Image 1 (tube, rainbow, N blue to C red):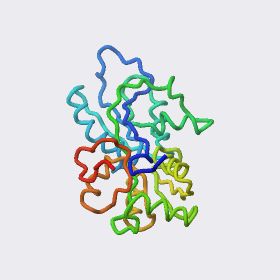
Image 2 (tube, one colour):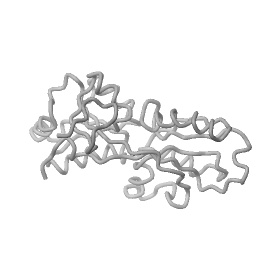
Image 3 (cartoon, rainbow, N blue to C red):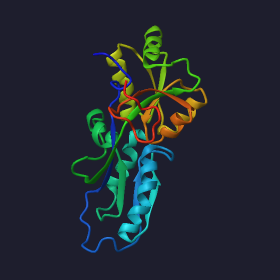
Image 4 (cartoon, rainbow, N blue to C red):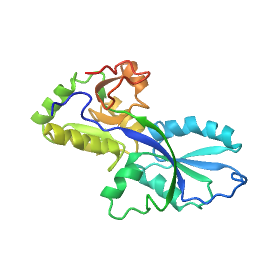
Length: 240
């Protein structure tokens, strides 16, 4: 298969879930609702949570408070939701990593994705990107792959943590291109991006949600994207 800037990444989806719930007919009646974001401030889960919380507050007539509980590819925050009282007052914003990928890679996951959650709704799909700093020597995906072939296990990429979809993107590219990349896991995309912009790592995989402004401003260079269609708001989303 020919590798293009649109064939190397899988997408991710934002999911709103609750602890397996049996809320009373008058819900919500007893105060604020907790909305857990499974990654640090500045990441996709956090950004979506901050957008959604005031709209939920207005619709439900009660305060919705966002709490960031990052770590372990989103499984820490998901576990906190799973262990919360089943009364509808704890929600979690999650995606493929803790609820779709984790059950397949962790033999002793502390929660059951089917029994411990009520899946409320799919909020949306988010394309993923491979990005490098603006001053990177990699101008194209082909440049990146060629250097990785010449330097096995030396070209690092940042991800949102072991077992996250951004981690698996790097492994997917390695398999498709016949290369060996060096994985550097973080607690979320925001600290990974900070390190990349500071020169600590040369590349990272991440959803578009938090990177469109950086791409459009020329702070980072887009090498590959998972979307088959132009992404709204993203200047460099032409089909290749």
